Amino acid sequence: MSGHSKWSTIKRKKGAADAKRGKIFTKIIKEIMISVKEGGADPAGNARLRLAIQNAKGANMPKDNIDRAIKKASGSEGEAYHEMTYEGYANNGIAIFVEGLTDNTNRTLSTVRFIFGKYNGALGPNGSLTFLFDRKGVFTINAGDVSDKDMESLELELIDAGAEDIEIDDEVITVTCAKDDFGKINRKLEEMGIEPDEAMLKRVPKETKTLDVDSARKVMKLIEALEDDDDVQAVYHNLEMTDELAEALEE
Image 1: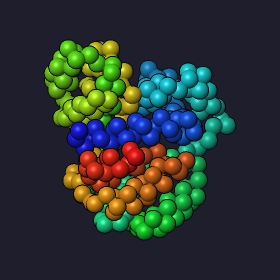
Image 2: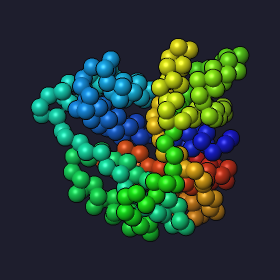
Image 3: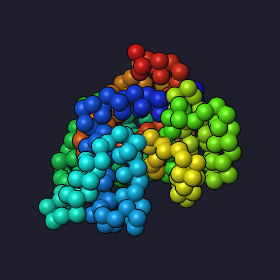
């Protein structure tokens, strides 16, 4: 199993646990609300909202929850969320890029700084790590939704639509493409009747760094603490997911 697939499999299992605590739904609702505030409540004319709704369905969010979030954001009483980014380093020089949606920027900055410090990391100035990551489209598909005979056709169709990398394991198919090809890949999946569990623009590290399991575990504590914060939408990093680390995290 290669890098993206290992992370996707672990994220999938963590996501199932997070969903029970409502964390996944909270993050998706925030994304829906800021999408409505920016581009209106009609998904037909708001690409960001369409994508947020698609990801909500992929996370099995009830339609009533989606509709309530859109309605709330459409009214004057809806919270005003701000998009924020934070950049810093964990132990052993692992770069960490954090994306957040918050209604209180001072609170979130204070919390993120505290988490970095608690786990022996350091928050740096914005822009200091951007060059270490590329913006890529990343699609996560349940491998059980695609039969073996359709897998080859799927790969060929997605490559033709612009897929740069397709990683397949027993549970997850992870498709990566250039940012500019995100829409084409999404439309191709729709044409093929495949609904991804997740479709997002992500920050993919240009190079990864391998650590021993004990050191990597310490870094993962920082990453997981950031991911568990309600104001944090996504955490990106350049830690290599080795087989040994994947096994350790699944214990």
